[in-house]
Amino acid sequence: MNTVTRFIPFDSSDIVEMCLQDTALNKEQQARFLSLFALLKRQFGLEALDSLAQIKQAYRLRDPDSDLLLPQIERRNHSHENFESRLVALLNRANFDEVSQEAIQESLGDSSIFKVHLNVDFNQYEEVLLYKRGMSVRRETLSTLFGLRKQTVEFINFDRVLIYIRMHAQEGSQPKVLLRLFQNVPRADLEMLFPETQVGLRTIDKLMIGVPAVISGAVVLSTKMGATLFLLGSMLAFYLGMRQEPVVLDKTALLAIGAGFGALGGYVWKQFTNFKNRKLKFTQALTSNLYFKLLDNNAGVFYRITDNAMEEELKEALLAFYFLQQKPTAVSAKQLDTEIQTWFAQQWHCKLDFEVDDALNKLARLKLATQHANANWQALDLSQAVDTLKNKLKDF
View 1: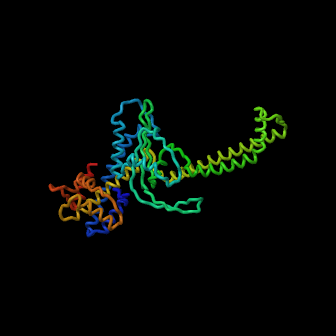
View 2: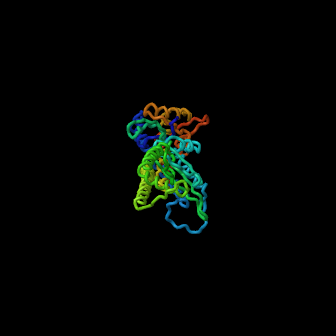
View 3: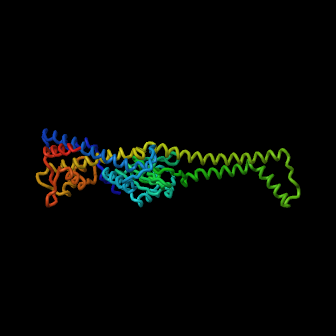
């Protein structure tokens, strides 16, 4: 499976140092490049604050954690489509990709790495969307046969997963939307991210409970219940006319019957306890696992994703400008894309799908690069770029 994604897995400050380490810029040019980085960071940071305020406003009527009173007033631009479009745009800027419904269903049918059978009732949700960022192939060693055997499994891991769940609308109110952000989620275990997931038992778990239960049940019937079954059988035969001699229910017989039923009750209770304890063990393991994977809930998700989006936009713009400004003549977007991706692969052993069109559009919007009539691109020199950004930031 292709695990190349558009996410750039380096911090923006490291990208700057990576560029300076691999450049022929003199000290004065390096200082200007650092100034450009600081100005770009401020520019995208201010834009991120505006985006954050807008999406929080669009979400507040759908936030299940909100403790604010809602007066009966007319509200503008609070449609669900407005909120969802803002969320999708934010996730796109943060380089998250949607997981298709087919892929979700496929993952639910995959063998779980977590070794727990989970049941998800999708009928309780109005809409379910999943977004992922960062994907890699990982290996993990699992214990089987009560720890006697070690098995190495290979699986697809999603570095970040956002789950969006729109609940059914209650009468007179907006439908609530649940947002959860997780880290390091195996593709085969996406079902564990859903709320109110029911923990079930796999076939092997049922056999581990059922086979000993049948064997011990047979032992109980043949030993503890032997006298009881004999007395009850004799009584039944007498009442059906199959036995002439009546059964005497004296104190000894009653004690034998009571002891037999007591043993049977104890056996049933023990099997029920074994079943509940095994499910509890899986539930506790699931809860513990999710505790370390959960990053944010509901409105808190926006702060992290907005910061991610700012970082991705900053890195894309910085890389596109750095490679463009080194060219004496204009180059095509395809040439630039190939050069940046090759640089990452050869110099930093990282394969990614660089969003060159998005990066160039940002440079054009900020007036740091222009597109010629032949569709080739050329960046301003460093001094002009720094001055241009300084003038633009005066407007904020």
